[in-house]
Length: 115
Length: 111
Image 1: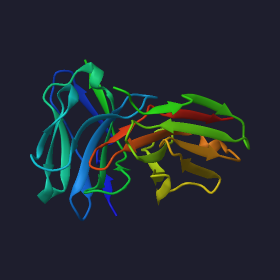
Image 2 (image 1 turned 30 degrees about the vertical axis):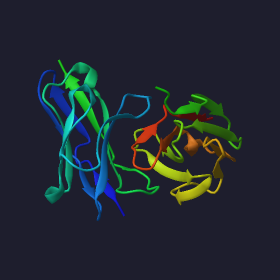
Image 3 (image 1 turned 180 degrees about the horizontal axis):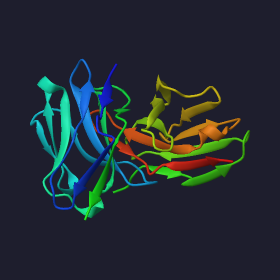
């Protein structure tokens, strides 16, 4: 069964500094990988996704993520963080190919942005 | 573009009452997933449907049931509500080969 690990519960970054949020997944076949962002009390907004092809994927709001099969990782990055990026970030994995597989989420990383 | 619509946005119920949550996916998204997110928790999968048939089942209590209708919308029925059922309930829609699109959720508060 697939699983996702986000080792950092909280991360604090200064505004303007770079950001990397870690995500490791466990899945035997080709995974579908996602990053979602959630503001307090709000829904899940898709930042980016990886299905296949180029391992460096670009998303919205200046985010990018790199799929590294050898490390089973899909880390999220942003070169310069803005105060509005403060939120909860969830990494998720779904089964590859066709089918009805559910998404499995990591426990989330809360990003705090300091002035 | 139209998104996934969930109703109601907020719901307050008393213990032992029933609640019905509705989800309207994006047109042609034929698979619907329900998730429960408790305070400070990650979303937990409850149940999913494809073409009106249950396709997968997660940690859904026996007090809950769900179905998908011919127009692909789905309803989550919750009975004998408990305080611990207070959570944000998301649905997501998906079409084969496409990603998942989440609704904004229904916040259920049981008092």
